[in-house]
Structures are given as C-alpha cells and as structure tokens.
Image 1 (tube, rainbow, N blue to C red):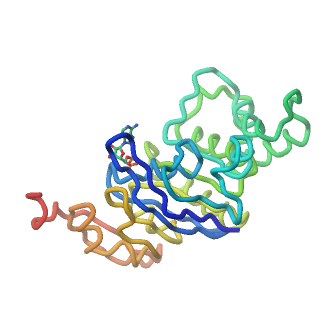
Image 2 (image 1 turned 90 degrees about the horizontal axis):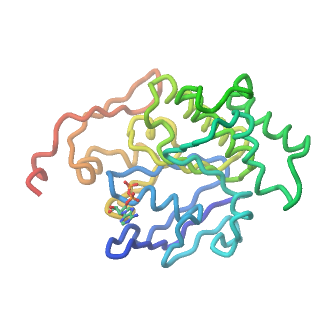
Image 3 (image 1 turned 60 degrees about the vertical axis):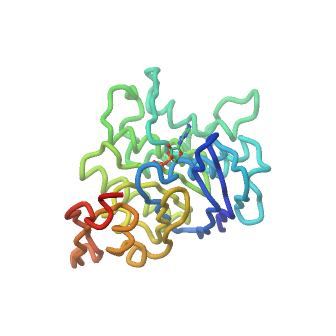
Length: 265
Ligand code: ADP
C-alpha cells in the first residue's frame, strides 16, 4: 500500500500555501512533515484528508484517487488526529471512541458487538480501556490525546494523520504518544503522516521527513539527510548544534542562536 501526493497546489485567496508538493509514503512508514510556522504543514494534512480540495494535483491511495471518494469512504481509509480536539459535551470515553465507527454504520444501524469489540481493541492498544466510563471532560491532556487516537483507530484506517500530536503534552506523554504511533506503523502496517514542530522528536521517531518552506518542499529524505545544520539554518534561520546521542541512537539538536547572516532579512 502506498500514499502518493502528486503536484499538490493550494491557495487561500491571495496566499499560495502549497506549491507543487509531491511525495510518497509506504505501508508501515512514519513520515514527518516539518517546517516553520506558516510553511503549509496543516494545509497539506487538510488536503490529504479532503478537508480542503487542492487546486491542482492528485492524492492517491494505491490506485484510488481520494479526490473522487465521498466523506464516508475517506473516513474508512484515513483517520485524523487534529491539533485541537475540543469536545463540548460530557460524553464518556467509550462514546467518543465509538464515534470512530460512524463511517462503517448503515444509515439506520446502531453499533453492533463487532463495533464495540473494535472500539475496545483500539482502547486496549492506546492504553485507555480503564477510562471507558469516565467523562471526557475529567481526564488529562495525555489521556485525551490517546483517546482521540483510539477514536481514529476505531475507523480501522490504513492511514493515520496527526497534526502536532505532542503539542501541550509533558515530556513523558510526548514519548508515549510517539512510541504508540511508531508501533502502529511497525506492527499494524499503518501509514502515519505527522506534523511536528519538534525537530528532536521528528528526527527520532520518523522514518523519513519532508521539510516544507513557504509551501514548497525544501528537503526530503531520512532524518539525517534532512536535518542538517545548513537546511535548518536556511529554513528556520537558526544555528543549531547537532550531536549524536548513543543511547537513543539518533542526532539531537540544540538551538544556539538566530543565524547572523539571515537575521537582517
Ligand atoms: P503551518 O501549519 O506550517 O503553520 P499553514 O498550513 O497553517 O502552515 O499555513 C500556510 C499559509 O497559509 C500561511 O501563510 C498561513 O498564513 C496561510 N493560511 C492558513 N490558513 C489560512 C486561512 N484560513 N485563510 C487564509 N490564509 C491561511
């Protein structure tokens, strides 16, 4: 299975947010979308899940053109974990997770025991089963993020899109969410596309990265190919110190200063 994004362009009235963006993601891969604020990361995720329609280009899941699918068909293929999931009613956690079955239900059908089994399984994977009867407004940020991932998994998608899944979480919950996402890709073969502003986490947990700058792909490849001092300086306008950490077997990045040669721009 493969997700192919081909020559995608999108503008908000006068702002060109995506300009000819193309990449592929394979089954079981975690692809990170990184780039400074306003570089087009969220717009790209929203085009992939058809919340926005690209002006040009195609998005294919194998041979299936997602621009030709209806909402229900898309929700069976793509699960979304948005940046801010605000839920205003005091639903139980189980109710929220079961909402993920909606695209699979017939118009007059309620959830069956099969739907319940799928929801409970997603809660087991995300370590949220013990919260099933709790009200969604009585739980912590880390738990809520895991519940939103459980709801997305209950859709049984082949692709999972996450927009800044670790935002507002403390360090241990950040690692927990990214370990979980990695497991979903490795063990279940799900395609994961995640947006992150954290270079250390993206470099550690993503198999490949797409670095966006002003709506275009500036660099794409393995983390060590993309996260070079030059690329980071060119795109983020900062000098970083890069060092290899033996215990996590990956490079780590410490911002040192705003780049002198570009600070006047
Ligand atoms: P990122 O997620 O990388 O911060 P976005 O995809 O949110 O970037 O935004 C890309 C560009 O599109 C930015 O220039 C931003 O100001 C603009 N933009 C985003 N959303 C809107 C909108 N609803 N209306 C107009 N411009 C927008």
